[in-house]
Length: 264
Image (tube, rainbow, N blue to C red; front, side, top):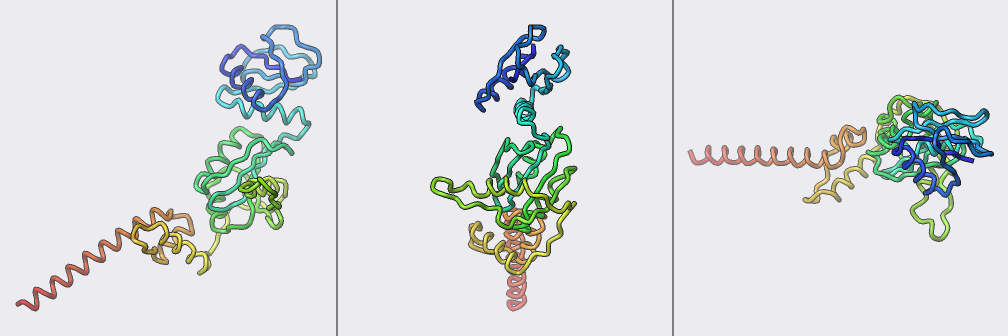
């Protein structure tokens, strides 16, 4: 049984709402009240002094992080080791799955540029977290790895991690693959240096043409900077347009100078 025992209204409100949202049975008491029989886990406010019966596990909740507290409670009840593992199926909109032990506690699908922030939020204050990222979508994966700081990262062979999707499951493939990736051990790495291929550069140039108002692709040099994460496609297009305007101005100045020379 889960027992919420705190005088902090913010913690009480946040934890109780999270438990209700997940359909988890619980009871509440005031600190100092008699404890119910069968209590397994107590949720209290971090730093709060509460007398806990022997044999009852304790989870200390932060007012700003009720979900993390509830995840710890559920993991404790399930008997898992509680380690936080983040699985990432890389791509332009990577799937991200967060596991505590064997329990999936959160899932996301966000633009690649936001993946690093998601990881940092999910592993904050976690004990011995690890991030496992698939080895596909090389360029995007390398950028995500570079964006993740102070967290051990393992590169996982993602072969076979994307499941068959039956009727009604469209759009879930990347997230489910991230769950499978999280459950596979990989090779620990600190970074991943990738030299973009000609085909990968062409894909970036094609994408820039699609997003350009003038239907003009960026140069290979700019495409290479996008591939390494130094620029976004939008930033590369802005720089390309700026360079094009400068070139056009220079061309007009040259033509005008030649015309003036002819007139003389």
